[in-house]
Image (cartoon, rainbow, N blue to C red):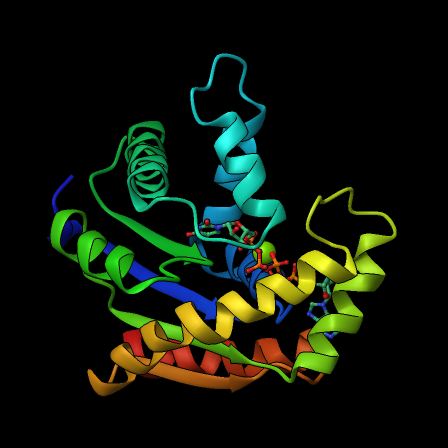
Length: 198
Ligand code: UP5
Ligand code: MG
């Protein structure tokens, strides 16, 4: 596909900030395709015969960033498949939880497509922690436990926040308070998209 035919929005924020929740709502009401890098990695981990299964598993449990080649390939494949399915060359994508390391950001924008804007969901650590521990009771996610959550927060601050700062200097970031209810956050999310994308 041609980068000029697709609209890419990066959806960033700490672990449990509500990226997935807001993306689902946008898909229902605004015709975006939602691609969660974490979900794609978890699916690849489960895929029989995947050469990356074990690697992904250990990176996710430790809250570390899987080498970018793997994730970028999964995202690019998913974008191509989506466009093939719809039989259109044009598409609107929410890329959730990616890029979360500087090298990924540079490589993706260079080799796949630059982002039109970044939605950043800002949330205090205590709030994210309690959401994740609550979800951990039923999610089955290997990283929804106190120890993994601590590691995810560390990676977020050290490795992923610099990506947000980088895009902020480019004027592409809209920062949203992620602490109100999902519906309240969604009102602001829709407004931010409208303001930036029209
Ligand atoms: N919830 C949501 N919004 C709420 C609200 N406004 N009020 C009250 N509760 C709210 O929400 C989390 C929980 O909070 C849910 O129970 C929800 O109901 C509730 P969710 O929408 O799932 O938040 P989200 O930000 O999507 O949290 P998630 O846990 O998915 O964030 P992470 O960024 O940690 O997870 P992700 O799946 O993106 O990545 C997992 C791992 O994959 C990473 O740690 C890393 O190891 C790996 N990874 C890479 O290596 N590379 C990548 O590029 C991406 C991921
Ligand atoms: Mg998520």
